[in-house]
Length: 112
Image (tube, rainbow, N blue to C red; front, side, top):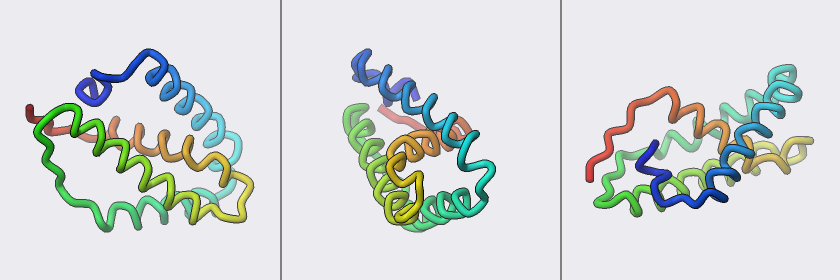
């Protein structure tokens, strides 16, 4: 994870942390008690992962670009899955939280 955030500004990091905190609140107050929302989020993640490939990048900057593309892809899928729900407007925050959760539960093989 350190390699991904090496080029981030303090504002980037503050924004990411803020998204995670808002995501935690959304998850605790709206998603955990509403199983259909969790199902929609899991469905978006399944669609997103079905096209997952191993990406090799030659620099930290390329890795950072790829990371943000992955985040954008999941955000778009979440917007589609959550269309018509009260949490659709939080799609980008939910995506950031879900990606952070995935990163916390995996080992990244980063090569420079």
